Length: 107
Image 1 (cartoon, rainbow, N blue to C red):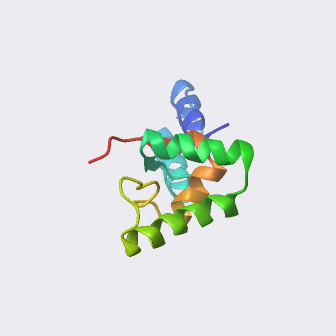
Image 2: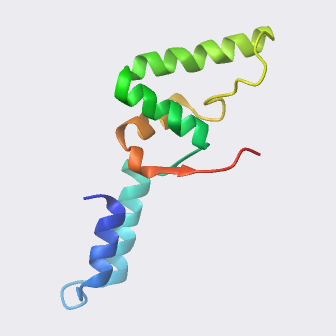
């Protein structure tokens, strides 16, 4: 069960007899933010992440990200910007909880 599913289930049941339902839902939301926060990325980033999830390792994904960053610093890449806005921690979070990815448009 995901945190969002737990929140929905709590909202569907009358738990006010035992606890203040608003308090419980806020606690679950805080836990979700702490342990499974939403990671925002482009659809292209998500597709690349899913490729690595199915065919490779997290270490290989991080190597690719850092190779792109190094190549960009040297000025030898153009148009390749996968994961440049994401930290290694964001990528690990998305790796562990791919259902918590939010697709955003490139700016």
